[in-house]
Structure formats: C-alpha cells, structure tokens
Image (cartoon, rainbow, N blue to C red; front, side, top):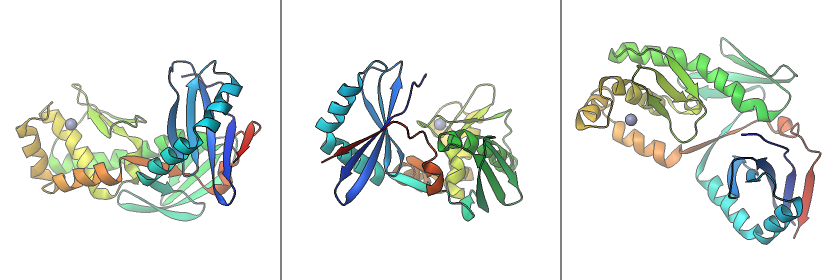
Length: 253
Ligand SMILES: [Zn+2]
C-alpha cells in the first residue's frame, strides 16, 4: 500500500485529553477506517483522492464517535511501553532497551541489552520484527525439541489478524508481537503451530495433541482472546515527536 503523506489533526478538548489523528491516504481503500497506533494516536485511512477539506469536515462532524472509538479501542488493547534505559520482559527473559537517535534504523541485541537506533518511530515495528526473529528462533527450537516435533523454517510476520500459521512445507509463521506475551501464551502459540505439522486441521486429534503438551491450553486461549487481542507497542515519548509534524491541523471544540 502506497502512502502519500501523513498530516496530523488534533482534536483538543479544553483540559481533556488530546487525540492525534494521523491521516493516511491509501490507494486500495474505499471506506474510511480507524486504527489505534498509540495511546493517543489513531490512524485514519482514507481513499487516496479525498480532499483535505472533506477529511477535516468529516473529523469535525464525527468528533464524538471518533473519541468514543478511540476510548473503546484503548480499553481493549494491551500496551507494551518501551522506555529508554528501562527493563522489558520478553518471553522468559528480561532485557533493557536503549534508544539512540540515528539515521541507521537498526536494532542489535547483545546479552540482555537491546539497542535501537532510530530516527522515526514509524520504523519501530520493522525493527521489532527483526528483533523478534532473533529472539524467537531459540524459543521455537527449544519447544520443538521438548515436544519432539520438528519444523522446517521459521518466518516472522507482521500480520495482526492472527498469531501464527503453519504451511504444508512444515514452515512456521509467527506474529512478531508474540515476544511481548508472557511465556505460557507464547509457548501455547508455538505448540499450536507445531501440532499442525502432525495434524493440518483443528480436529479432536489435533486438540488432544495440544492438550498433551499444554494441559491448561483452554485457559491460555481465553487469556489470549481477552487480554492480548490487540497489542500496541508504545515507543519512548521523546521519540514520538520525531514523526513528520509539518502537517499539523488543530481543531478546537
Ligand atoms: Zn490452528
């Protein structure tokens, strides 16, 4: 999807919270959609040629509904706060995140230190995907050995609609956000996909196999559905403003 530019509209409510709306003009889209990017920031995707005035009027007209949607989305999301020089739990290990301004946009992991070099938080998800690849390979290999089901290749996806999948070539695909889950739910997802190597379906035999390795899997599935359906990664506050800010529009009540 080709993005043309990202202007920000700000809905300001006297002393109430300020909500930022990043408008993304996208090619293959017919309807306006709203997605929570960060705690106070939503992405509003609009058809490519929507005139600026039309967007502004639409936001003004739907102000209450937008705020309500943001609040609903926020209450249903699980936030992972990445802070500079602060610890973060990933799977069964604790790490410290270090952030540095740089044009390089890269991530390195050494012992328990994760070093992000970024110039724009919009690159963060790409870097976390790379990080997830490094962190998940050992995690998946260990589980594979433990339950004695081998796989071919591991792919890390940024598909937000599912946690994982398994192909007939015995390749495992995992959502990069798994690294921010507690160990048991993350392990369940891996066990689930590995069991698909034995049973390429959700038959009773498949579930029996899952249960053999993870007897409490039903409870974990419930937790995944209720608590971790939508994981939002919050970059350090001081890095959020690095985003393109030349197109800021303020709307006051
Ligand atoms: Zn499945």
